[in-house]
Image 1: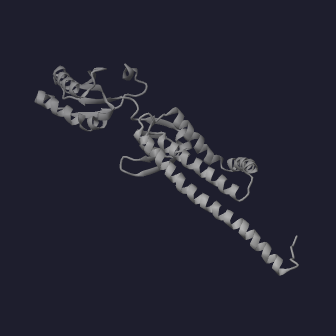
Image 2: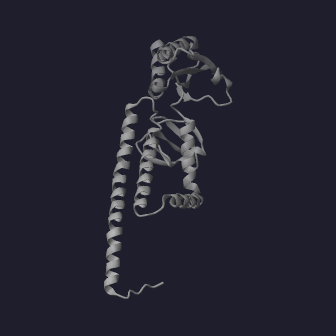
Image 3: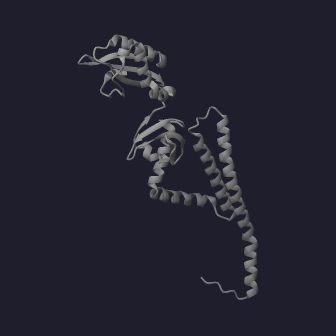
Length: 284
């Protein structure tokens, strides 16, 4: 309905009254929003700093808790600002519930990332600092830097930044290379034909004892003999923190140990291998 004032002065007075009543409340609402944004950022930083100094809270959950504190303060600031404008918060919450349902139906893919993030935080298949790889549509591998509500942030071995939605990781088979305390390392050594493989086995065993864990003890055994040339298999367990370093140098150490034991033990080939899943001896 169109309002036509009978008197221009009355209309001006009405506009002035409305402005005098509404504009201060609008200014207060804007101020509440601005203060709420700063308080939300401060709350997130304060929660993150507090958890950094608290050893009882896992580092994996710290970013999520800081984000939850930030969003909680923002929601309270928005509700307070709307109440300054005369909006009934009870009806607002009902409207927000209906809008949230509609948005949830429209953003099923995004909300699936939130659900997957909650499950990752609950079940803890990996933590911040672990090296993981997931068998997805594209191979995903890297060191976990942050686990968020929507996505995980990884860093590859060559320093690349990877942003992976939580649902992608949750729906894929996952291997955690850092979770277990020990790693099995295997390699085979081909000796020359007619070589004294007992002496070679003793040299390799002495070399492995210096690098391997005490339990289970290292193993060196004859895997095959082809035309008088023995093939030795070496298996030993190392600490997780030293696995990469030992894998890089173990083959050269094996070659030097054999040549120091006897020039006749110079290996013809050394190959690092992984026992297949079908080999039950890998678990013994």
